[in-house]
Length: 423
Image (cartoon, rainbow, N blue to C red):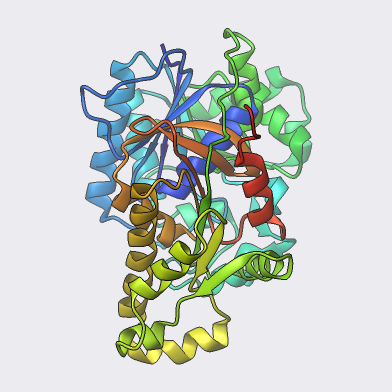
């Protein structure tokens, strides 16, 4: 019976969370959307992650979907819950993190929880209540120009103020180093004054993460990024029977699909091509003008059957800007659907390894493939696990947010998932 349940606000965030739970020693199953009542939970699963689309949903829908997810998890016997959002917060003043967390505290009957977006391994840390990205305050980082969720403040309490009904209490490093009994006494005093509230602990390194879990790991509800999930999983899995590691290797060839235009993904494409990788670049202008079609990309894949092929639409910011004269949403939708159709066709023709770079592209691919749940294997990079669909256990699927992964990511994922001859 699962003991831990996590509700994430998008799919790549869910797979990110799942990867750190696996790294901490738990067996994990991920559901794409609210599970149906008859959904099957694999034998021995200790943690369940549910991927919603609540980051950019209307607030009412986001709250309703989260409450339904928490209710389903309770029905499965889960007693510890986690709300997962992005380590760069990604939420406007009218955003959903506050309303969803408020409703979860009320639903689960807890007086307080933590807000812990930090992920130090990827450069996201909290210092004196402020969120930093790569050493820069959040509102001065590239996130200040995010097209959907531009960040206007770095102080987490300031980000929550227009969203939440409840106050925030910051717990700075020097306060966290005090005896646990002293900290709990301070929080008890706060409980006497407030019906509900949030604690914002500093989180600069893994030692801080372990301290946060030591102080708050027994709470019924925690919220944050994926940074505290590994130490939390270690704490919980130490009480559980260890299960065999999931097999992440598969026979046959692979298709790699990239739609992200992030600096990290562009570097990964360049590295793959420079080291002999076969690639095909989709030209959005040619596709819009009818000079190129999806069939051209598929023909290239078929001509190189048996060899891993990268099909990408990723491009530099300057080139993307030129294409956007055709309409940003129109171009993005066309390229995402092209990648999704290629993935569907590749799987139908026997390809057993599918790798996708880019959050929106990943969402389109998972929707097109139609799988409802996945078991989670080892990670290729922090936050990027190998996933095995419950409905097709011969397939290996790897989805990554644009900025995740090292330069050699594409080559590494092919090596990790390739089945050795004679196995």
